[in-house]
Length: 457
Image (tube, rainbow, N blue to C red; front, side):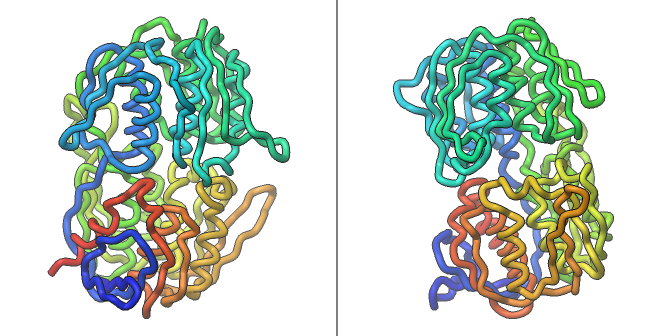
């Protein structure tokens, strides 16, 4: 499937190094069966609610990467007892008010989910905490979380620039009250922070969403016995019940990680990849729905719910090489595939006809400006791609030509840009060079190893 070279030394089919630079050229057709580490969105929430509950919780298929470890280390610094052994994380719950003041500032690296959800937890604690972030996360907006938490009673100060708030953040919690909040943006992180704060508030907390976002927090709260009701786009949490551990949780494979292999198989003729135990949360399966609309050959088999998986659906995906066609992605679909938009842009380049992705402005405020990083790279590879504004919406328009060409490309220090461009380079004609993909450690340190497993003959 490929030959990746570091400097002038050929690594043949071994993607074992995450340093720089890489030369990439397709040589083999990807084929095989893979199973991915647990979904990081679910892992963050499982850790947090396990700590805030009573009893011991075993987290199976827990992903070990920079983001999940940021949450694990943050909770440990706040006094939680968490042990990691042979792929299983054991969490000893300390209850909703059992966390303790940290002796030093909490560092959350570049994990936006860690920072925003942790602020929701800390809002309910009767002590002050300073939270520090890494280089990229310190550039991401935090007013969207800070403002509703202030309405609930938390005292928060943050670095301010151009009327926006950024890390570092100092938060003093306790004495919260429930609120009714109409979220102006579609953000599962904002919703989750409010609900986590609501666990320690007096009175009910309600969140109204303009557009539905991933519901991992709501599902996890139900699993831990919280009094939560979801009706249409209204979530109501009554903090009148203590959380109790369900005993063990199997974290399904990360569909955001799976997306790179789904597209890889779809855009290379005669490819065939099977992905086992993949998460199939309806709020996260937008990439599958859109690719099917583009005539990708994807077969989905949903597993029957078991003792530790009934809170999140999972199943098997079989993807075959396909002849893709362009499509339109509408704003209401964006929240179900926000993290997968970079790799969808790659798929659109290999499709025939025009693909329009509407309402993508949120990509500007990820680890990097992903609209810019993907447009710059794909244009270098010969893509016809434009970005325009229509009635206040930022849209991406790609005129698919069924192929790309090798080029000098950059990761921009962003894990999803890096993995998307590796997939693009593996399917392109000719040789590509990518500057550095060390950033994949953030969410998928086993990315290259998994690629290697699919190119064995």
